[in-house]
Amino acid sequence: MPFDSNMASLAPWLGIALALATTGAHAAKLDHAPYGTTKDGKQVEIYTLTNDHGVVVKFLSYGGIITEINAPDRQGQVADIVLGFRTLEEYETNSAKVYFGALIGRYANRIGQARFTLEGQEYKLAANNGPNSLHGGNVGFDKQVWQVEPLRMSDGVGATLSLTSPNGQEGFPGTLTVRATYTLTNDNALRITYEAQTDKDTVLNLTNHSYFNLAGNGSGTVEDQILTINADRFTPTDATLIPTGELTPVAGTPMDFRTATPIGARLRSSFQALVYAHGYDHNWVLNKPSPGALSFAARAYEPRSGRVLDCYTTEPGVQVYTSNFLDGSLVGSAGRTYRQTDAFTLETQHFPDSPNKPQFPTTELKAGQTFRSETVFRFATDSPFPQVNP
Ligand code: GLA
Image 1 (cartoon, rainbow, N blue to C red):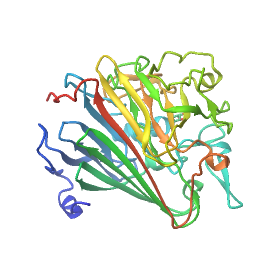
Image 2: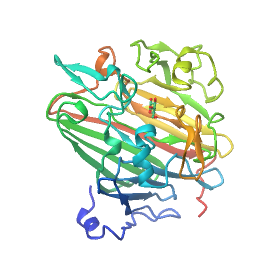
Image 3: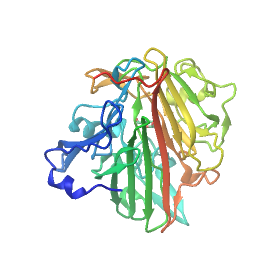
Image 4: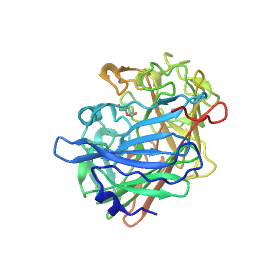
């Protein structure tokens, strides 16, 4: 149930704090404060979610960007485990390259040749990634200021971010209303739910583009972090990363993460898919008990800190990307440059280019229907969840 949003409007410059629970050492709370002004003059706020155990998630109204996730290691030492920047200006300047932490839409990932046909009509999109459309085009959801409404939940603290994308924006049909809800639960999970409705049939693929490094943002490569992906198959692509349409078994290939394997173990293999993508940047076809079920997608484990990240989703796929395009030219929020393999993403999603691949699970949203999806990132350690050190 939304908390009284008038309260928030009464105190926009002061920030607010809601004490929601006092069972742990840290009372769950939600704060917000001014963060900056966009180049075109829009005010942006930063929101801080803190749960009973002292796990902290920060996000911006700009792009719904998750700027920090502070999670303890097995000793209770907290580190920020996502890549980010220090200023709004850096997010605005670089989002088109890296999409750190952002909500992605209308269509996360690629649409081949930047066009698709829906009910006999062809729609043309901006080709912003070679010949293809990537992550919603030139001004995707990652570059828009969302309206944020704090929420009081029985199991944690959260906020709903919403926006309306006008008919024809970035070439997509239909007026689309989107709501994404971030909830930090008291069992140490960040739950992201998405809802969308359109007034005209359209296509849609929503995700969050956080880059994780479980040893800490800016600490170097994730090659020794250990990944499990609950997928027997992946979607191979052409050289521009558009799926061929096949679902190929991972067995016997460097794409096989069905048992826990260091990310770097096979990263430099000459396997064609890895050569095309300069590393991992692929969609895995998740094994699911039934289509749309919230089920286990992936686990990452960092042996030195003991941090564990589990990902569950209702989506049929996950894009794992080993930050192949980070080239040392960007300085991140930890004051250090980011390079290839300094992070991995778990972009839960429908498959790339689904609007042009009738054999893939559909990304069509019909007028009057409601799209719903859910992804959960659960933070843990390899020993009982520790008391967070202040
Ligand atoms: C996704 C894509 C990558 C890259 C990043 C952003 O993960 O699949 O190819 O575009 O986003 O840099």
